[in-house]
Length: 549
Image (cartoon, one colour):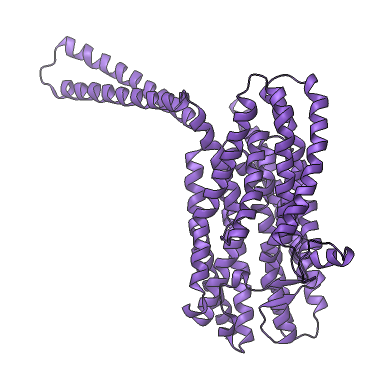
């Protein structure tokens, strides 16, 4: 039996290692293709080797964005079982790549969020190229480490830390805009708190208007179309503002006489325009969902599962739209520095914005898709199920929190991280569930198990003390020896009880609505993302400079 078990373990280990090697092999194959293509197409350009290596770093960064950051878009949908893991990966791959290609923009900011003053480099193009290469590699390495640890972190903060560290290494502390860095640091609190509060409010509203009602189906017929219409409004507004801003001038060219557009035809869509487009689509969605729910409600059971079913399709659309907007915006985290290096290598100049060649955009778009397919499931499981248990209503609340928070923060000028918003939303719905559990059954069980464990430990110590006293006693009687034997038996029993109680306590702690260990791990990763990426980037910059000097 033991030999058979060992054989099964060996078989599983071999299968796992084989799969891991296949993943690594495919990732390396992609990076080799990037290296060959970039080197072959930049022949005759001075420093083209730098550009080729930077392209590899950009591809590596893009894969790590796909492996870590995309989980925030589809994790809640997978955790609530609105989507399967395979379906989520396919949808995210398609819409991430589409967002990057369609709405990624023709020009990108080379220095994310303007955290360093590129004028400090002067005419030292080489140092600028080395700094951008160091920033890319450091951010990618940090994301890789975070993904291995199962911690969802902000890719934007990773590249911010990388650029800051390399900039300081190249030109000193004065190159950093510390006011901007302070605003970014404030997002560590603003983002999760806003996301958590908004998600909890939406979930509480659903519970009050539908779940806590005796006739859930009648309440759902009235309220579900409203909630889905609100989602359509929020996501359309979010998408127009964050995902379509780069292609808005082309939209204006097609519909040249829209009455609500900005006076400047090449500008980005205003909040009012985005909101009106969202309102129009939300109204149409309301009518469609109203009919759909009314037709199906009579054939459904009056329970929570039936209500969850009504949120399934909206969640699938939410995952797709979040992925599209993410691809349009966060692809710049991988290709921004790469575009800067491409511009510096080919023109010899340093610029704050740079055009994006198609091949650079392809590196970002395909890199994100490949990273998601190869290593995305790990973080998707973390976001979707390892922090708190999710169903469709909770996942809906988290998705709404992501869209609404971005809209509010954009209008108020608040710095936020969509990663932190989503994870904050997961925490928010989890803590709301704990608060609504008026019986506090789980917490009561944990307290009781802890008290029992302390009692058993005291009894064990008393037995051990008595045993020690008898063992050192001289002139032992027959009763003493019998008692010693009895004490050994009782100590063994107490140790068994303590072991069993610890196991029960551990099981009860695992059933908490929000896993406290996950909170500690994720918050720690957030706090050290910028400084860790900065230190890594500075070290890599000095290493590159030392090699080239």
